[in-house]
Each structure stands twice: as C-alpha cells, then as structure tokens.
Amino acid sequence: MDSGYYAAYAGLVARTQALDTAASNLANANTAGYRAEREYFRSVLLDPLGGNSQLGSTVNNYGLLGGDRLDLSQGVLTPTGNPLDLAIEGQGFFAVLTSRGIRYTRDGGFHRSQSGQLVTAVDEQVLSSAGKPISVPPGEVSIGSDGVLSVSGGVVATVGVFAFAPGTELTPEGKNRYQAPEKAVVLASKSATVHQGSLEAANQDVIQGSLDLLMMQRQAETMQRALTLFHTEFNKIATEDLPRI
Image 1 (cartoon, rainbow, N blue to C red):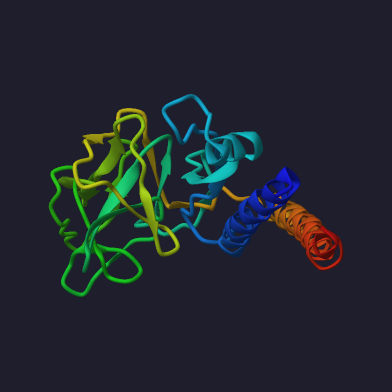
Image 2: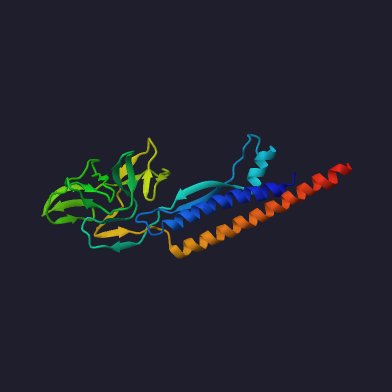
C-alpha cells in the first residue's frame, strides 16, 4: 500500500484530535482558572530493532499525536472587589474537597457557606495548608499574599496553595478541576502569591483560540481530501488494473 495513505491517515487522526482540543480551549476561554491544553507529538520506535518493522517505520516517519498537556502559564488577574475571591500569581493550585475526593483548581471564586466554611461556587470545601476545611467566623476578612486568612485581626487559617513535583501530569476533570496522580508528591507552593479580591482568567486568549480552531479545521479538511484521493486511487487499481494481471 502506498506510504502516502499512512501519512494522510496519521495526519487526519492527529488533526481531528487537535481540533477537539482547540474547540475545548475556545469554549472555556471565559472560565475562571481554566488551564488550556496544548497538543504534543510523539515519535517512538515500536520494535527493539531500531525501526526495522514496517509499522514502526510508519509511525516514526509520519508522527502521531501523543496527547495533550496542560499549559500552566499565568492567566490575567481581574479585580472583583469580593474579599473572598482569590487569585494565584505563580505556580500552584487551591485544593478543594469534592464528592470524588480532593481536586485542584485555579478558580478562587469562594464564598462563606451558611455553616461558616470557605467553599467554592458549588459548595466544595476549600482546604487549608494543613489539608483541613476552613471555618470563617463573621467579621472583616483579610487574606495576605501568603494565604493567611484573618478575621477582624485574628488569624483563622492559611488557605492552601499546592504545587507538584516536576513532571507530574494532572488530569483535567470538568472545566477547571484537576486530579493529581494517586502517588503524586504534593508540596506547599513556595513561589505563589495570593491576591485577595481578584480572580484569574483562563490562560486561553479568545482571538488566538479562534485562529487555532480555524487552522485545525482547515488542516483536518486537507488531510480528509488527501485520504479520499488515495482511497479513490486504490479503488481504481483494484477495479481496473488488477483484473488485467
């Protein structure tokens, strides 16, 4: 079979996956704390003989989409005036207790629940640096750049900002929640600064996201046309040339 068919097929698979990623990024461009996903490619030898197999050669010659990685770059901080809205500048995540366990987020849109705890917009408990729920007594709330939460001058707790060992891959869950691997090393972030009364926007620009989506769509269409051409040529060979042999 013509190697061009493999190239077109690999290209179509890669561009289709990239198109899905670009669409998701654009759809969440206005989601607070959203971390965009960026595609990456892999080139691997599938056999121990250094590419002597036809399949291994095909993968290495034409490449396959390896998947998506989170873009952990900083989003824009926007003042809100709400004293319980928090934004992180630098590396790190807030920890929240969900029905599925602890998840991590950059969305600091918090409020005080009826029971007096610091919770997210969907009433998930926000965890302290010690991994405990945070109770917020009535009074004037002040949160320092180190996450220390005080009410009427008295220290209550420290809002936890956590980081992970280099190379740790977080799994996206929903719009802006992330799950750490089971045995991930979770550390207190040393480079993060907490901003009270602000929220961090998604790190996906709407204009660039629209351009990415358009480019991926056109590339996928190009690969589809190429695949159709090869398929038509193979059918021609099968119906016209092979009977003559």
